[in-house]
Image (cartoon, rainbow, N blue to C red; front, top):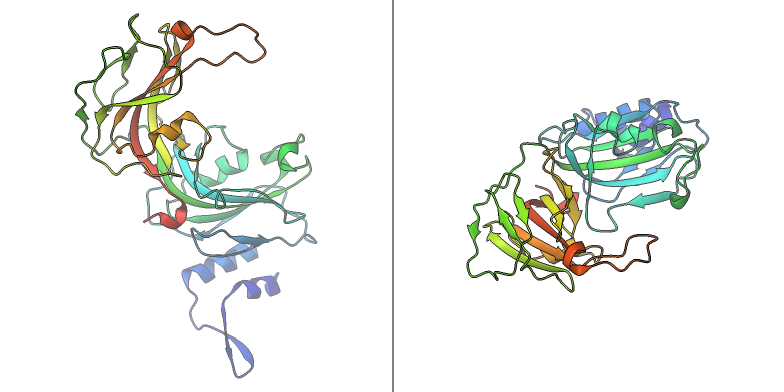
Length: 321
């Protein structure tokens, strides 16, 4: 254990001998504490893809073990927040990386502390300040359980190692800081959105509305914030209804926004690239056949309209202030 701790501390080489600095930096102290807990070694600074080395000969703890390697100065993550973070996960016994956000170039967003992610994350990341780097070892019971995650190559007996760079978090009080201006001259064939920015809108699809033949986006209130960049995680509230005015999904009942990566060729939210932060937009989508159904959807009733309030955007941790 002591040898491992020494290896984690930056050393100065002088006269052929290794001599420690007289006073430890905060990073050195954090690394020392992590080593004392038997946690894997982590190299790399906040925002950079870490290299993690676990001692496969050492049996991992049977409970969640963690350490804050870098303590940020931002607001603390609260239970129920949307957590924005970069992360790397690997199997403890093999040091095999099964997932990471650094290579994708876009952070991830997860509701935290409310059972929407594995228990080890919920237990560890609530209360951590933005700008922090955390390492944790998570046993199967607090990870993917006895079933594991075959798609990721995780067995039911595998303990996991995660390094997480906390970028930001968004709760019920999150609101756009941008002033929006209503766009004039919009087509009268659009669905109608009523209600002030910052409050749950009412979306109504009149019979005269024209169903989309492909995904389409229209800015109805233009914000004054920075344009959304490709690869950013966009923080948003949304209200989705069908063209038959059937309620589908909404972030407003919980009050906590959601985050989606844009410009990655993965979903219709890619159309948000270039839209100013603080805007309200309409995203219209043609109907999709129901899974396992042979019935052909009706565009006049099964098309979807989503009213989106664009609150913020986040890039990777290395871009965070």
